[in-house]
Amino acid sequence: MVTYEKGGRGSEGTRERLIGLLRKEPRSVEQLARALGITSNAVRSQLALLERDGMVQMVGERRGLRRPSRMYGLTSDAERLQSRAYAPVLKAVLETLAEKSTEEELEELLREAGRRIAAEIGRPAGNFHARAARVLQILKDLGGSAEVEEKEGKLVIRGHGCPLAAAVEVEPRICKCMEALLAELIGASVEEQCRRGDGSAHCAFVISPTEQESSTEKD
Image (cartoon, rainbow, N blue to C red; front, side, top):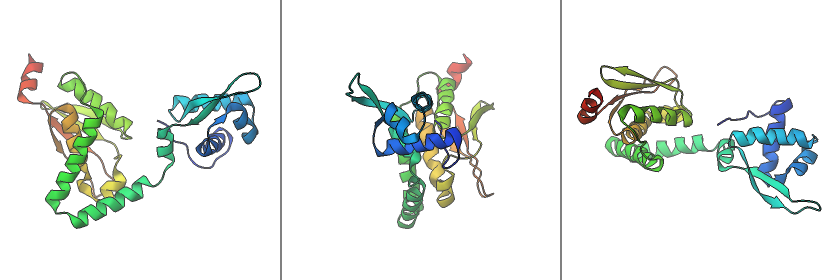
């Protein structure tokens, strides 16, 4: 998924203006071309890139004098990416939960949240290593940059940066949510060993296969 910075000129500025128009209502290529003051081919080129990135989709057709015109609108992913409300709202919710819950209650709430996310995603198929590889891709899709290494029969997922950094600043135990998420998806014991406190957050999760899977993969 690609995000687009505000401001700028040239193609980036055109993308921003095009997205702004589609946030108001679906439009055809011709309507966008007129509003942006560019050619229809230039609009099609921009739409193709935005469709590729999952930002724009065709939402219907409008009758014309000669033939129907395709109408384009933003996807739900694009709307989410345009919103800046998620981080401050999440921070406020976490602060409220921390104030009104005991440590044990808050940690269990965060673990339950992780299990719910895992249930929505669904556990990947395959053996322990195959599931871990798929989960690594899921983490990247969520906005993290991570790699995995094997150490003494265990897997260690290390993240460069943290997709939940803004939330971790407010409540470091948010990492328990990711710990539970990984445990459910991989079907293994997961221990969170994230590094925090130096002005940045770096994820680290140690994953231990079950005795049954460990012996099976050795065979």
